Length: 101
Image 1 (cartoon, rainbow, N blue to C red):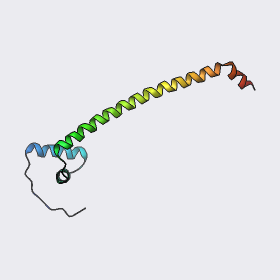
Image 2: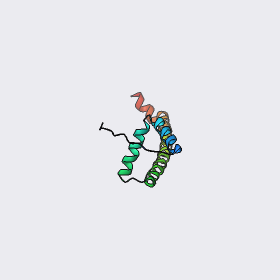
Image 3: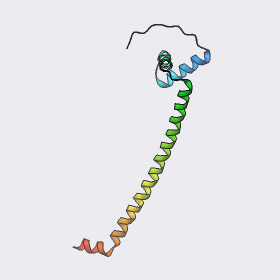
């Protein structure tokens, strides 16, 4: 890790509390969260862009969850159709003839 320099920053109590909650939830330190925020700021990422990205990510997750649910439903239908085909084939006179060979 690069050499770090001590910098004193005054935060509003709500900012400090929010940073502490975020760091605790992510298993990081408040200083690391501040460094990440500074990096994003220096890269030109705006708060509005982060909000848009967050909203898009949440929407994509909902879409993917729905797709997974739909896929599970379709797979159950395909499995049922294949099982029915196996049952019909097993009862078929042709199938009995082929089995007796």
